[in-house]
Image 1 (cartoon, rainbow, N blue to C red):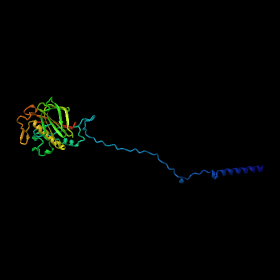
Image 2 (tube, rainbow, N blue to C red; image 1 turned 90 degrees about the horizontal axis):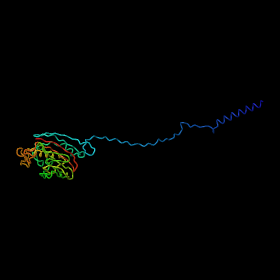
Image 3 (cartoon, helix red, strand yellow; image 1 turned 60 degrees about the horizontal axis):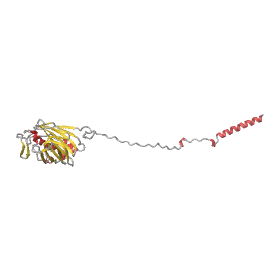
Image 4 (cartoon, rainbow, N blue to C red; image 1 turned 180 degrees about the vertical axis):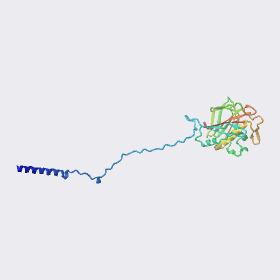
Length: 292
């Protein structure tokens, strides 16, 4: 019995030693890396596509000066500068298409109200009553014609390049009309600032008078226009005017030259329309009425 217990005890001890040996055997040990010596794994951030940003432009509000399809009505500017001896309604200027032409816009803004009292002469010679007027900024008195457009009251209005055409008559032009009534006469001034002549076909002027001529300075047309409409208005209103230096045309007493408004004393007022155009493109229309 004693020998059997010893064998059992010895076998148990051997078994225990074998288990311990297996647990601590170097080939069965799990090794953990030292956190301080672990080689970091490189990571790559996902690629991103940068979206470029575009600044939104600031739109500056501008006055509408166009008449293209869908555009709002053109703006109007009214000025007034009453002169000695006459009164006026002030210019109403419809700037239709001058946004791309600052020169025209500039002289329209400087346009003075007609002053018949101070313009006894046509603006092709020095004016003793307007000392600051420079003839180089005036108008040529070219070829006149009367009666104008007498056949059936319809004709073509030819305006050469960089010329003007003056018409005094009852007229119908591109939807604009004027009929003499109650002593009011009609004055239409067409100014072609373009590089090509243009013919306005099938217009109407009833037994009128016309003059065609050149303007001398397109940068200062306000001076030429002012002098022309002032002098022509003075003639129509039977105010003192001269045809040549020292040669009277009207003296305000005798029968008015041309019997404007169909009466010997001339008109009481003049309806003035100035149309600035480049070929067939109307750029601006200025209107006023001057009264005696």
